[in-house]
Amino acid sequence: MASTKYIFVTGGVTSSLGKGIISASLAKLLQARGYSVTIQKLDPYLNVDPGTLNPYEHGECFVTEDGAETDLDLGHYERFLNIPTSQANNVTTGKIYQSVINKERKGDYLGKTVQVIPHITDEIKRRIKLLGTKKKFDVVITEIGGTVGDIESLPYIESVRQLKWELGYQNSIVIHLTLVPFLSAAKELKTKPTQHSVKALLENGIQPDVLVLRTEHTLTKAIRSKVARFCNVDNDAVIESIDLRTIYEVPLKMLDEKLDQITLRKLGLPIEEKPELKRWREFILLLHSTKEDINIGLIGKYTELPDAYKSIIESFIHGGASNSCKVHVKLIHSETITPENTDESFEGLHGILVAPGFGHRGIAGKIIATQYAREKNIPFLGICLGMQCAVIEFGRNVIGLQKANSTEMHRTTPHPVIDLMEEQKGISDIGGTMRLGAYPCRIKRNTIADSVYQSNEVTERHRHRYELNNDYLAEYEKYGMIASGINPETNLVEIIEIPKHKWFVGVQFHPEYKSTVVNPHPLFISFIKAAMNVNT
Image 1 (cartoon, rainbow, N blue to C red):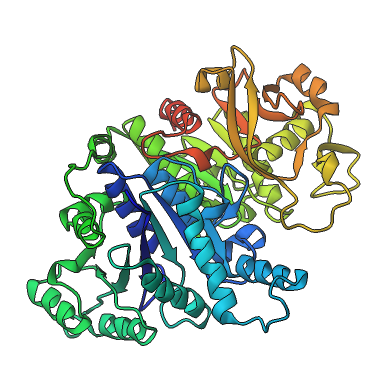
Image 2 (cartoon, rainbow, N blue to C red):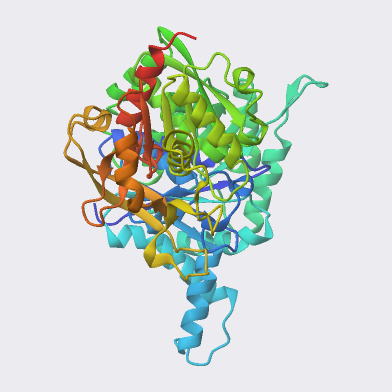
């Protein structure tokens, strides 16, 4: 292929229509046809990254192999494509302006007035094309965050307009995702929001090549024709994206709608290969033909917004399908848990997962949940802070260190069983100071971790600053909580477990970030299998 092709995905009418899922689905279909594809997300907010954003603002913060804190859509990209993303796959307005201002301070612009056009748009275009030049891809899909008409999105839309002209004929297309609402009073679908959305795009100099219409009802041929006529697109380029049982059915729906064929045709690419989706279809079949149901309690402090735990929830879907099991995740707010209501809070659960997080809010409930799982012999998985809660609880209630704590929660605790990483002490800037990205972990033989991974050494992704304090490790192992995974370079504890328990594992890393449709994470597979053997 002579050069990389570019696909830009924009949205209109409302947010949360699923641009990320459509982007990932199209990428999956192109990948299944033999093309090398990657996806990037351009976020309009001024934060440099989502690392310091409250999960209530933007859902979970997804972490890449190279340690970038990114938008949760990158998790969808990895789960669908089964290939890792990187720092280059997520760009924010904060990063763009930071880069331009740094160049201005160094004198790179030779005293010129720095403006949105051309300096900001040039930097956006450079970032968009970076993936196409840094590593050779046949197709780069770029998802533009927000909706058309948002003030903060205008520089990105202008950059797309310029790039379409610069890249030339058949080297780029724009796919615009809009909503076709159903008005129950009128009992009909309305196309006017889509027309106005496309009009807003046209006012910014961009004619969409393909329209994807989100809808709760099937689009008639007349509606498709009307949209095509008023929005200046081909009839077959009006794609229906109807509500489905699971996001993992969207690629198959887009295949039926021929979104991949229309895209390839407009990019001037051959459509010879039939898409290889055998394993994907097998996963969907497993997903809808489960033989058993289990209930897992997810203990967290952002449970009002399930997207705060998006990767964990999706990992349960992947691991459940592998076990022919439907996992019902019960979101339990840790602040509602007290010693008096444990039986009520955890009734009917086959397993308990204590979720990651930061800060002292809700810690008491997480520790109570951990103690309940340990004492009742219920399968337990603690992730990051969840592992640390398990260490604190064990120290207090088994070893007898009544004031055991993390220095994150209590700086002067007499028993800092969880403590700040030595190299982070004295750092006050909370942005980008953590242990981030992939780190190695050496597995101890004849442990749960050994049976899970069946490998001497693995790599897992991290996002934290505090660690298990090795000064206490010998005492913990004496009382029955062992370190079954150790970082071979730093000797930091990565995995703890209680051998005498049915299945009790805590991990300092985030296994959910590496679980995909094709490769469900083995920790989730094993945890679910253990939970399936519990009688409530």
